[in-house]
Length: 183
Ligand SMILES: CC(C)(COP(=O)(O)OP(=O)(O)OC[C@H]1O[C@@H](n2cnc3c(N)ncnc32)[C@H](O)[C@@H]1OP(=O)(O)O)[C@@H](O)C(=O)NCCC(=O)NCCS
Image (cartoon, rainbow, N blue to C red; front, side, top):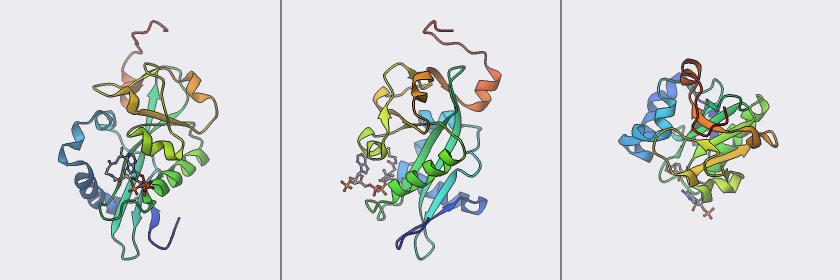
């Protein structure tokens, strides 16, 4: 995807250091203590679902990734969006929304059904994210339910998404338990 101010490309290994620097600048170096980071710990982003943006001078100015997650035991395919960051000085130019729109288009094309994220609802509502009803889906660790948002790529999938969010490795190794008595 290209416009006259930025180009969106699939992230390559060579972009890793630049992306980490951009994320440290956008979120601070304590970003790894956040709940969504802990959920991604030890995991890799989904192949083909990490993107960067470069300007006409080839500077790295934006990044977005998507990660596999599991909701409860029997939930539909779900992916976690984040981190999303746009370099300061290049913000408010449509890039954040363009990165999301591009990533979500690719995710839908590759068969994913539900996107979840932790973020500011007023911003993500611009591209259709809504708050998950409080208590329906549980993020591990400290979090604010009003920041837990979803976007359906397949209509109706939120109805069957109930329970604790887990990373693929925790899903594989831990027996399913929830404290709502449904299973
Ligand atoms: C949040 C972020 C990704 C937005 O990217 P961007 O390219 O600047 O955003 P866009 O150009 O797509 O959209 C800009 C619009 O969204 C609004 N907006 C930006 N961040 C917002 C937020 N956190 N909450 C509500 N609105 C927000 C802007 O005010 C602007 O509004 P306008 O169109 O009415 O002027 C970018 O500001 C950023 O990297 N911030 C630091 C990291 C971060 O906080 N990321 C996650 C956010 S939860």
